[in-house]
Image 1 (cartoon, helix red, strand yellow):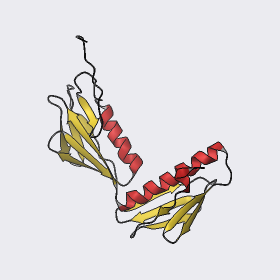
Image 2 (cartoon, rainbow, N blue to C red):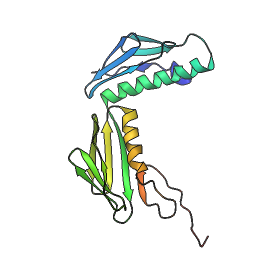
Image 3 (tube, rainbow, N blue to C red):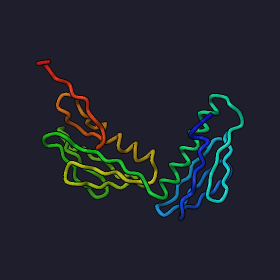
Length: 177
């Protein structure tokens, strides 16, 4: 039994959902998102509740059951509340500046690192070492945050680099250990 797939989703006020064949469309105060769903999982929209049914208990169908429910839930949360990822720059001389809609990062390289603005994503710079990435698409927000972190991942000796705000870096002792 899929525990995630069996949970119904309640539709918050101000959010409209529609099923057009295999395409699930969610409209809310933050915008509109749509996603192509699999044929195997049946989606039932009853007033303010969405439930999901699977035809059999094959392992691939069971996995798809929970995944489909999670994806639809992320669409509904995205159009009603939105998603946010926070990054921190740690290191001497590491800083960030807002450059129009994009970002300019100084990460210890001989050149500044430019991050282009993507449609549907907004950057907020707090101080000169904190970045907040906001948007309605959870996958896109996470991918942009991962791309920025990949420019200079944190190293284990001094902890310098770009890290998520809630990330804990395991530190190593170095030569004297």
